[in-house]
Image (cartoon, rainbow, N blue to C red):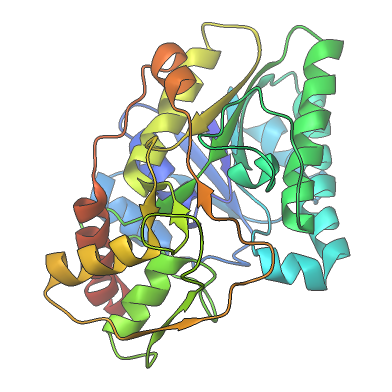
Length: 332
């Protein structure tokens, strides 16, 4: 059985759908940034009912009960807080949930001799000084507490791997996941004002917000707007399944980027969304945001070699699936 922490969240739920094709899954989620109705959506898509436990990874007793009761073979760890802006305002909350939460989880895994872990990291650990494309061997730096928590956890996992050769750890550095499951049943449902571009575009398209703010058009990019590596969330989910398969055959720790290997600008995203979905997105160019960088996209060479991973879905798929979910899944 695979334990998926944060398994009802955006990326977690899509990964659970992929895992259920061949694995039994236990989801642990505190519903802080997710909803229980996603459990029924997963059942509708897969015809399978994963075990669900509502709880927090910082709850040592609960983790002990889970590992004692269930035959957990591997863990995919998504649980954590993820808003960059919020992390600047309440850094201690982020260190508690992300770093302390992961530490508690690792201690429980070690106690119960579960040594296979896929960890959800982020391209934010590359900071704002490295040239693109970002590759796994680059020096790391961070510009906000959220990114720093990911970097600290990566260092903790590195120390753990070096201390005990029984551990099999895969750190996956995501770039910008977008889109939704083609069924329209699960997708990105941020609470409050979205931090990411695609859900904001969808809310503008639906009339929930008057316009999209584009933060700067004077970057050194083809059209002046920021460039990011957008990857379809279903491709990202497949990457986790491949990572788990790799761990079962290889010891040690690996760090792998999951992206498409190319960047799209904000304006490209807006124009593609308009074209694919036949809808107009009003926007206004405003000042740059502090901490934003001009371009961010992945080197995907390592993912292709060791995971045999390649993204299958393109920007048109991402825009179509996100809008379909916004109209179908959000209203159910």
